Amino acid sequence: MSYGIPTAFVGAEPCGGAPTEPRNTYIWGGNGRGKTHTACGLLRRWAEQRGGGLYVGASTMLHRVVDGMRTSGMDALCREYERVPVLVLDDICAHRMTDMAVEVLSRIIDTRHNADVVTIVTGNLPIGLAPDEAGSPATVNTVAGTRIARRLHEYRNLPLTGEYQTRRRDGEPPEPAMTASVDAIDPQTRRLIRWWWGLPHADRAMLLDALSDMPHPMGPSRDALLGPPPDQNNSTARAQYFGYMQGERLVLGVHSAALWAVWEHCHSNGWLEADGRTLRAAEA
Image 1 (cartoon, rainbow, N blue to C red):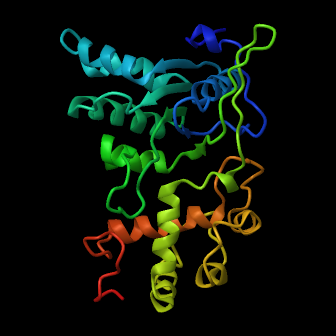
Image 2: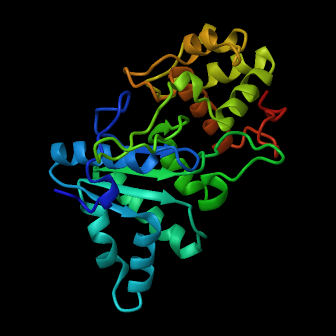
């Protein structure tokens, strides 16, 4: 069964290191990294397990829904995309995101999340919920808004940093070359690391005390987050710090996930100054 997969990727297989458990996943990286190939390979595998699947380009889906609203209601137009057991939304944020496009995309992603069906999203941009810095590149957060970025932040994050091999062998589709997570620390996560270890030791300890009851299944040890920062330029230190989560080579490990949760809690509760990095004096 083709599941609507483009002809060039009908035979796509998940390559080594790709996750096996069906779960909401955001695959991102620059052009030519093999995002569509990876998404289609996962779709073929997971659709067989879940009993159905569909591939659609995000811009194609948005055009169908937005244009169709002239004659039909949004509920009827979105239903196919909201109910299919496994859905690939390929290349979000590739075109201008109007208010209506953001509303449709948010609705479909949120509805699928609440229905406990699997969504695979691909895009060129990092999510971008780390503290902002001057001159930072575009992110899902800046292009599509915080609502979509926060939802994708809950997904398995799969950054592709290897070059996509375009040589075809025996008429088969090319395979993406992937690198391990310790070599795929995206700029937003690097900023997050700089934010955390830029805080005074007392502030870090206060935050960990305040958030000690916050549910987070991947929480690291207190000593690790109060100790010295990792050497991001040392591959051994990166491997020890980030680790591999559940054997998935391409997913950042426990410490970065916990830091995202801490920063998001601080941000949503107004504990940060306007720069998004400094703790308010009254809270510190």
